[in-house]
Length: 160
Image (cartoon, rainbow, N blue to C red):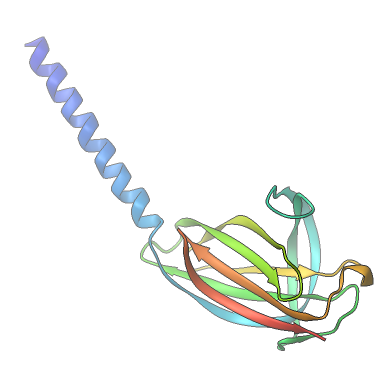
């Protein structure tokens, strides 16, 4: 009798684990990304977050943001803030997914990237800010968004 109860408990645990795995994998299923807005933004600082794959080793997390001008032409000067606002589309609205955000510049040999947790169906923002004139290099700067190795969105800006 005890052996039968043990087998039933083990079978029920295995079934529960497989159901839990299928629910979490639904949350991670992404159908695409829609870019809502892009251009020059005015943002407010929230806090710093570690980002070891970036040149600085950390990224600035934005609190509030306001689209100032929808444009792909960014002035080559310190203080310029720009980026994209987008929505991750998927089957489990409200579920969390990890995106790889990659920033690359046509004139530089390096890129910056970090992982950002985003909510399906909720607008999100990723961007870049030139803190000083010494950081500015004219050329093309591209923001790319990847999920599980697949590029789902990109926007290229001209730093001019």
